[in-house]
Structures are given as structure tokens and as C-alpha cells.
Image (cartoon, rainbow, N blue to C red; front, side, top):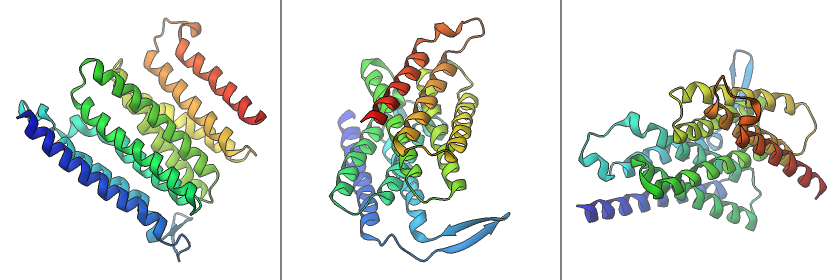
Length: 274
């Protein structure tokens, strides 16, 4: 029975990855300069074109494909499939695929584009594999995948913020992307640590604070790398602090958020020098 599950998993996993690869390559082949229609909502003008919808469509494809792959997990032999149980495992495949598509859209069509594609594609594949394993999160193996999920998710968030700062995407859309991606990344960290039942509320709080900082930094001349480092460092520090927060604890009893804050400042200083 285990070998049947493994064979079905590998078949579906390879098919999903093949469709995602085809979708990413279409970004390279399609012209980036296309005619866009205007949509006015409450005085806010949005530019709409098929090219702008490609990241969202690829992210939805990743979610549908992930559900299809997760259905092969042996855990469903003993219980009925639950969409609510796998929902946290769908967030990062969704947001990582969208982030990679946005970054590829902003990248110049050159050899560097293919390097970005290959690295990002490997990360998406590893995240899909990790989330599959974490459906039944037991043992040392799941701990390694938890670390992989957290590190890659924050790395992708860093790439997204840098790409957005370097792009001509409208301000309203930028803040929406920052909020949603910060929400998904923060919620995944909090849900993996499982120290509170209010993960969603805390994730919303952390992502809202980070989005407010991005609004302030939007009107300040700051290079994209420093912009991304500030937002990513703040998001990790806030998420880590909220996951450990207790009313009776003193500020110096939160070593991880404090260490991350110092590391963020150090990285910003180093990036400014070099």
C-alpha cells in the first residue's frame, strides 16, 4: 500500500511541476508590453491585462495541484480528507508561486532570468514536498522540513519586496501584495510553532504593521535591498515575538526577535557599505 501511495504521489507531483514550469516559461515568451484596459473602482484606477493575471493564475494552479498531490498522502487511509486541515499547507505553495511569477515578470529577459527561474522553481518544488510531509508532522524529518519552509518562505518574501520596490507596480497593488504575502508567511511560521490558538489574529497584526512600514518607506528614498531587508526582518521579529509573547515576560526574555533585529540592522549596514 505504501508503494502504491509513493508511485501515485510521484506521478502527480511530476505532472504538477511540469505544468508550473510551462507556466513560468510562458512569462518569458509572452511580450511584457501589452495593451491594458483601465478599471475605475471608487476613484482608484487599475490597469488590467492578461499579463497581469498570470501570477494569480499560476498561484491558483499551484493550489489545485497541491490538493491533488496531497490526496495521495497515506494519512487519509485512517481519516477522511479535510480541506481545513490542508489549508495551512496550501498557503506557501500559493504565495511562493505568485512571488516567483512576479519576480520573473520584473526580471530582464536575459540569462539571469533563467537563473532566477531555476532557483525559484527549485524552492517551489521543495516547498510542495515539505508541505506534503508536514501534513502528518511527526519525528525529526518533519523538523527539518519545518525549518526549510520557514527559511524559504521568508527568503521569498524578501525577493518579493525587493522586486516590488524596483517595479512600476501601482502603490495600492504593492501594499496589497505585501500584506497578503506577509500574512501567509507569518501565519505559516506561527502555525508550525503551535504555541497559540490565535495564529491568524497574530499573523494579521504582524502583516498589518509591516504593511504600514512599507507605506512609510514608500515615500522615503531607500534602495530596494535595504527596503526588503527592513520589511523581512521586522516581519520575522514580530512573528517570532508574538509566538512567544506572555504578559509576565520581560523584553530581554525574547532572544530570537532581538537577535533577528540586530542581524537585520547588520545586514543593512553591510549592504550599504558594499
